[in-house]
Length: 270
Image 1 (cartoon, rainbow, N blue to C red):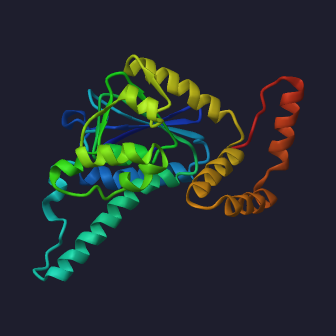
Image 2: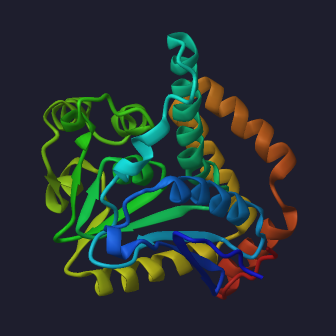
Image 3: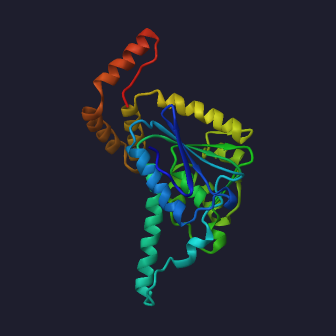
């Protein structure tokens, strides 16, 4: 049975899960419930063997308008003492970081399908995805600078690993909008589609292509990509040697080889 969420809509079809941000009347702004539910949802998906790919999208006219300003209400806790208030804020920030990191840590590929608005926390969120796609009307903005704060839940740490450093600095320093075409040119999104319907259809096709591969091999590939991002080449080579010595499935390998030889479709266990 699928879990129910207040701010997310979850469905699974043909081994592809779709997670829709579901506060359309609030432009999918991220309130307290959405932050915690994102982590709960992606941790559930991480544990669900029948799920091989996740599509992250948004219901309504906007993908995500960023942080719901109501979240700022009690970030510092109840103490009147400055150091304790500071520690409470630090713990809150770390918790919000963990909420989004659950997307990145989910062992199956996560494909973000982004339309129209994607600002602030929405950028943090999509930086955690494996691959991003956008509609022509999509735009991205690191809007925290316009609130008088430094972005603190992942964009400044992940985005420089995705697009050129100078582009990240310009976006972070100015808060300007980066349109979908520019996002494609700098490598933040893989493709731009005419409208949301077309994007979701095409992204679903890509997701089903991924879902047809060996899930164990796919989990290993994602693990290696994330590890290699944060480690040296020699460390990455050592890790994959150790991983494959224990994790490479002979059953999946034989299925893949036979399918290639016979020009058929391999069938893999979840």
